[in-house]
Image (cartoon, rainbow, N blue to C red; front, side):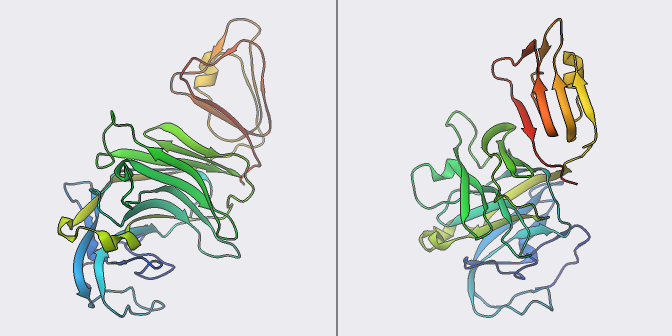
Length: 308
């Protein structure tokens, strides 16, 4: 089944920690189920197919052992070779038509290294409960592998379903995670010491869990379509002391981590821009007089250690 050549300088179409199998799920990941320029140029599709009792597998080769035994489902997955420590991570994608066992996900994973390292940006599971098709979750794992759930979000019925394109994202910094859906904050974990500080790879996969036993197999193939995946490094300027004295300076403020930030003016008003603003510092953030946050505008002030 090895009938293509991939450029693996940045991504690979299988998982490093387990070869082409992941956990106790019901699919096997194959490169052929990661489709480029499908359904049109510029997209990548992870396709789940129903192939009863499949035994002929591609595998990466040593040190991964060949896969044995039959699998009924074949699907796609991608993982970065590079690892990232702190920053902003976003995907724009569509999720597959609802079917029992669907388990697509976008997540960060760092393997072992003395502790368990994982952040789930989103997981979408179809278990047969009411409105599963409009629900996804997010969370992270503590060092003892205990899952810390922080997001359970149902897309309102007046918004497009999850089979339409949406963006899912997190900001990750020391002891802090903020979850986003279509650019709006939907959950957070603030100053939680069990949030990993280890570099992690980016993974996207379309898994099929135990509930696939109740799936309508005639619906396959089913697709998760990816427009893009973005990763932005958290920048550090941890020696700088910044004073913001007007609205223009606030709007132009660099998002890098500073030492100290002071916001205030003796005359006039400093207003948070409609696009929102996040201030990050390692020592303190001081808000003085004449500071205004308009209704519906997002303002976040975070103090944490310098990531460097």
